[in-house]
Length: 291
Image (tube, rainbow, N blue to C red; front, side, top):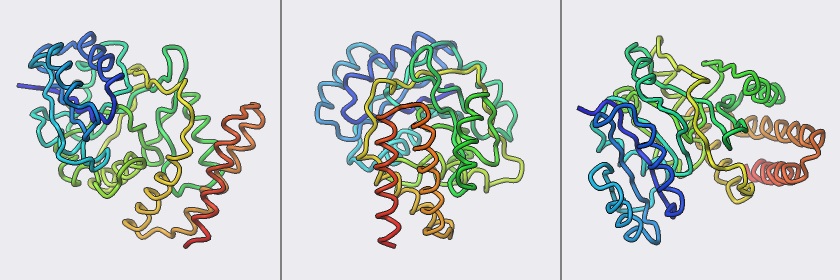
């Protein structure tokens, strides 16, 4: 019987998936009780990639060709519905594990009120990333400061914060109860939505953050993507629609947050991030005018 099922969605991830899978098997402390599922969202070279993975890993990896590219959440849902374990690990193909973690995670889930486990995100083996973020629509400016300070001191506050979506564990039964990922969200913003729905699903639901469980999200040298900004804004507005939250107020909050980030990055003299947040601010203002 499998105890943990890892679901990895790929899209043109041929250069990344190998080191991701190697890190899993090199740090597998469950042996045959670990299940690994790769769902491909119609990558250009999927046949070549799957052939290579089949030759290297054999039956240790279940390979699924999605019949469409329905987005990150939809691809994960395909894998989750095929998973046989009661605990699901959602993992991006650009994530690597650096130590055995699975037995420790299983011990947490022995408490039936635990729904999710979050881990410490690194962006290189010696550089911290953002492990959790303040939920949408929290008090502007304060949300930025909380994000910065709480990640610095590794203090996760369950009612206010959601785990980074690159790598986390979730109880399958709890996830199915809330309908899995919302497939209307193509990409970005899934973490906030899942956290909100799980938190609303039961009074005693628990989210555990363990700073000693670590993974590396290989984004340190990756340029910031301005093209992702409109998708993030659309996801935020969809969240507002679903939960009857004022869209204009939400965008105004985000505008204040981006102005705060610009001040912070000016203090750091990080010109790249200054330009990124200025672009984000411009697109937010356009979105506000269009409402």
